[in-house]
Image (cartoon, rainbow, N blue to C red; front, side, top):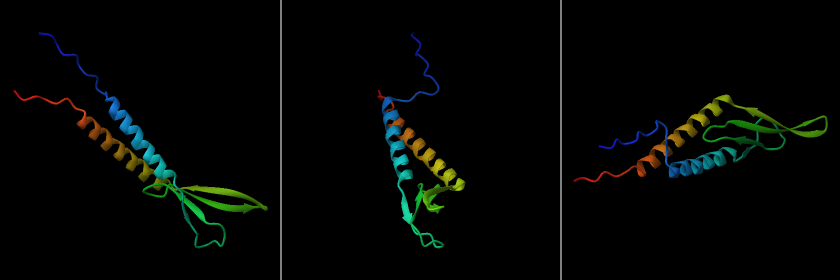
Length: 108
């Protein structure tokens, strides 16, 4: 009898890779959409929050010595939550795509 070739340990279908690419694009898009808000302590320009589902960074407009500049303050807890959420979504996408493209067994 001919032996079946062993599959490599980590191998995905092309359709899974394309699905992961689209899912990653949606996650990046969601994280880069700014949400404007007015800080309670300032009477200046509105600030912007970035990140989904948690705020990963906040961008404030500041004026130093008469010239405008932006100050970006990272939130490391939000970055961690966003990264875990992204990994969970990508893992679920990979499992779903691989499950849908698995070979079908024909019952005799």
